[in-house]
Image 1 (spheres, rainbow, N blue to C red):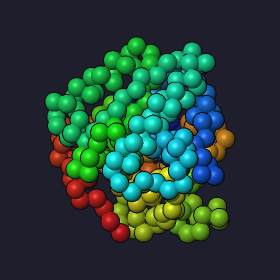
Image 2 (tube, helix red, strand yellow; image 1 turned 90 degrees about the vertical axis):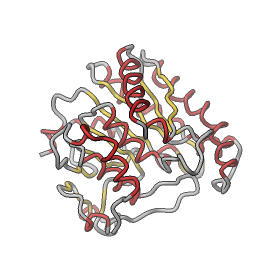
Image 3 (tube, rainbow, N blue to C red; image 1 turned 90 degrees about the horizontal axis):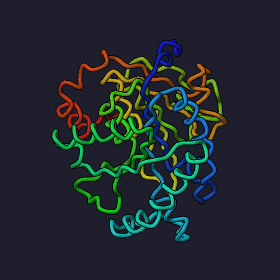
Amino acid sequence: MRDQFIQDIKNIVVKVGTSVLTQDGKFDSQIIDRLAAQIAAFLKKGIGVSVVSSGAIGSGMTILKMKERPQTMEGLQGAAAVGQRYLMQCYEEAFSKRGFSTAQVLLTWDDLAEKKRFLNAKRTLKEIQKWGLVPVINENDTVATDEIRFGDNDRLSSLLAILVEADVQVILSDTNGLFSGDQRHPENRLRIVDKMDRSIFLHAQDKKNPFTMGGMQSKLNAISMSVTSGIPVFLANGRDDKVLTRIFDGDDIGTLFLPNLKTGHTRQDWIKHFLTHVKNPVKP
């Protein structure tokens, strides 16, 4: 079944979580290099890839030698300001040595919650990809406020997948998919989810990490937004060796969430669709 969702793809959105980019309490730039090597292989085939990357606050915390995530908005924004430059530097270095360059795209809630600005962002991203650049997208943590924050990049990645009309969305986290029980037992991994009902949300097992904000509940809400827009979603461990290559080779890793609407159906009324999911997320 996986094969039908990885053939003839033209556009992919890859979300890289902070839990992927940090290890043992430190920002790990090497993982960006490994992911860039895999993404470059898609780019050379003419497949467009948009990267939604967390990690600005996490990398800022590492540079500032913080052990715990700041609790105030100004503390979070300050850490993001310190870390965003370094985060983009890591992406640019990783892609440039493979013949590609990046374009930084920072967004806030009101950039995408109003139709005119949403469509402008869509045109901009298409232009960036037409130039052969890799858009690296993040929430603009430095200026976002409580009222306009996405809250985490899972929802941002799903909205971007809808915006760029992605064929496939990949969410990379620190878990090899969704599990129905103890993650130490591989047999508990849900290989395919064909319906995003409330029972799926009962499997959410969030891990505490001082660097991160989102969790499995957040990911499932984001995935629900994507699959009801006709976009299949893979959830996998971003630290696994050649994870992106293996997903698109059809290997049985992570969890595939099947789309339950024809592609393009809900894009005709994207504002209603988006606001419905954000204001009334599915809960267990």
